[in-house]
Structure formats: C-alpha cells, structure tokens
Length: 437
Image (cartoon, rainbow, N blue to C red; front, top):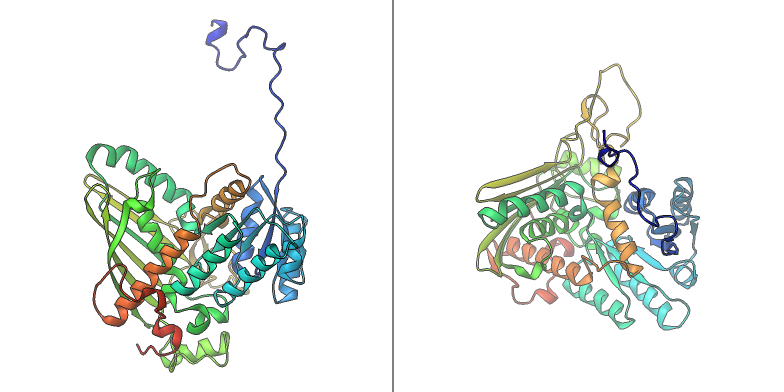
C-alpha cells in the first residue's frame, strides 16, 4: 500500500511544524438570566448542557422558592453558577448578566419588559440582547408595545420558537427543498400539530391571564412551523405571505361537567370551565401567496384534549413529487410495563406523560428533540455577534397577528382576509370571559 493512499496516516506537508496557526482567543460565554422559573425555563436550562457559548447565571421569579430551585438546577447540571435574584432590576444591573431569556407568564410580559427597559434607561445596567418565549404577547396591542419598548433602548431581540429549530424539521425541510423542490417545484401544503392533555400551570387555563386557550398557547408554534416549511431555505418569511385565514375553536373535553370538576380540583378551585371555558381544540387554515406567484396552504391544529402517551408534535410537507412527515411519538425507543409495575406519576418518558404502564414511547433527550438546544445555541451566538437572528420580535408580532385573525375568524364563523380590519385592538372573547362554546 502506498503511503499517501492510507487514509489513517498523516501526509507530510512542507513546513507544517514551522508555520504556527493563528492564535484564536476563546470567546467568553454569554451570561444568561431567566425571568420565570417554571416548566419552560427548566427545559431551557436542560438545553444549555449542549451549549458552549453561554452560561446560566441567574433566575428571577416572583416565587422566590421556585427561583432558587431553578438556579440550583442550573448549578446541578453544571451549566452555570446561577443564583436567584430578588428583582429583575437587580439581575439586569449585574454585569454577569449579559442577556435575558424572558420565560414568565403571558400576563406579566409587558411589565417584565418595562422593568428591563427602565433599568437600562436609568443607567443601572446594560444587556447584549433579550430573547422572548412564545407567544410574544396576549394580543397585537401588547405585542406592539413589547416591540416598541426594546427598540427604544436599541436592544437586540430574538423570538424563541423551538419547533422551527427541531433537527427533524430542519433536516427534512432542507432535504426536500434541495432535492424535491429544486427539480419538481415548490411545496404547496404544510401541516403541523401540537397535542397534549393540557398545560402544567393554573394560569394557562385562565383566558384572561393567558390571552385565550389552546389557540393562543400552542398555535403560535404550529402556525409558524407551516410558514417555515413553505419558505425556501435562506429566504425571508415575507416571500410566503398570509392572505386569508380560517379559524375554528371548540371546547371538546374540559367543559364537560366531570372534567371541569377535575380541572378545578387539580389546577385552581376558582376555575369553572362549565361557566367560563377556554378552547381546548383549535384548527387554522392559512392561505399564503408566494413571491413567485403560487397559492400554498398551511394547516395547523392544536389540542389540550389529546389522549395518548403524552406530548405529540407532528408536521408534514407535501410537493409535486415528494413529501415528509415527522411525529415525536415515533421515537424509535419503546418500553413496556405490566400492571404489576406500580409507581408514582411522572414525566420521565415523555412530556405531558399520561400513563405509567403498557407500551410507552420514550423521547430521549427532549431538550434536543424539541429544538431547545438549537434555538438557545443560536440566540446565544446572535447576542455575541456571531450569527444573524433567524427570528426576532418582529416575527413574534406577525405570529400574534395570525393568532388574533384566527380568533376573529372563529368568532365570525367565516374566512377572513389577512390582516382583517381592527386587528390592533382585537381581544378574543375567550380572553374576556365572554366565549360560549
């Protein structure tokens, strides 16, 4: 065998030892502070285990015990020497905190951003960026207010939408556009769904606090995923513009008397879904017009009334001679437990786990599978100036407009042109406690 044909041996290069490589100084990890200490924050903290560009250094929550617990989780996972802060102002003022991940409840969104901006304007602190969990706000008016606040202090911003960062969605989309669309034409139909048995926290179930029901809570994912899939890689979402929207909402399960009692008992004693329900099912069809003159469709569905192993995320993309499909419960790993295997309830197999026996799918590495790792890595690099933001608060505002148009369509019982008139001031009946299924 000839020397230079052996792939496992180093080939000699002239002056290889005498030409030193340029010295590259490592970048200091970005110091991240979390507003909020609940389920979503803890998913992000898990995601930071796979990120080298950032450390979790702080958590603030109105619940001091929960804030301390989330900070302890970050230290336990060795993703940063995190501590709990007594106020948002204190956290933003700390030089160790360079960017904020905004993961608090929807009804606190505006006041949380106001405190961040006030701290910066008063000269008490500086930030390199702010990332906000979905949805950006409860309605268009609030979303515009949030966007205007961060623009006022020139703060770089990113919209945290984990599902467009999932490895399966990104890989499938890129392959279909490169191999299928490039030879037979652009895709014409995208579908996406997020389904589970209901949220973790009591405030999610209250329309006035959350801003609606499952449509506001989860359609923000699915509506953006279909637009993302229909947009050519590297191009702006503006090349696929929504022009008509048809929305439908329903309370299929949780307003039934027997389930309303369960909800009141497990979530909030003052919560009565027989009198003031939020929707637990929503479906939206979005008609898009593309910059190259095509009509394409997005179908999005979300549910708090899904009965299955646990959280199910799914998506499809179809074109003239190709298709893709994704379902998180097709995980490749399954376990079986007989009736004799008994134990406490938990979510160690899959998020929103509904059973502890039988044949159960396991989603290994949920923070990676659901896109948290990739989105957190991306925005850490964005705020360090290494990448251009793929999603900003402007995108978050556009998503809120789509959600509100879907609510308006559902209330009107017909398809609406997008954007419909009066959208800036529109508040869904669900959010006002006036909706009757």
